[in-house]
Length: 184
Image 1 (tube, rainbow, N blue to C red):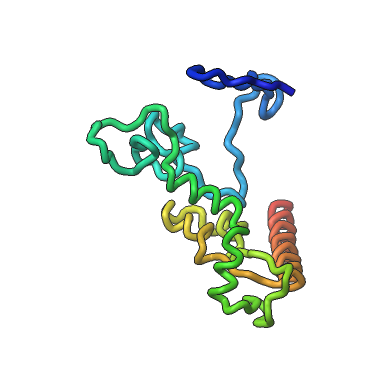
Image 2 (image 1 turned 90 degrees about the vertical axis):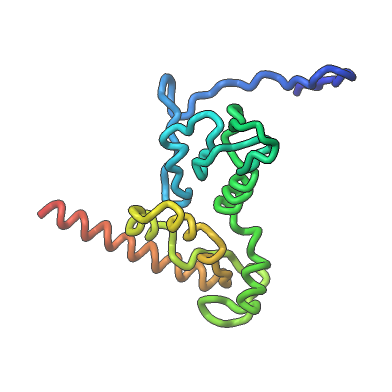
């Protein structure tokens, strides 16, 4: 453990981070792909300096979308808008919206219409694996709506487990059918 003293007038310095490869020695770090992550077209293309990796727009001072200071050029050291950071965090961890969604649903389970129990869970109405499999050719802005508040519902844990099991069984049958058609 390192303890660093901060002197007045000098910047605090943290210890150097140990470098570790993402995917083995010598491998290039790749962007994690999977159906739980929102699409990242601007990050995958390698966003230009001063462009947001989420929306592709120029990032100005303090992470703003507009140049309020009239500098005329985006901040070349920035890669995220402040609003895009907040949206990205929400898309990756929507559990914080549970109370809001429960209030909209009048504290009723979206699947069973029974009263929400204490251990109720947040769930996507349109499963993200279906978006990944069937809808990924849609426009970027439309795809992002599947990670947003409109696609969220609060369900009781037993109903969520049953729904997830049914979705997993459906995916397994699709994979089995694909294997049979490939073998034939």
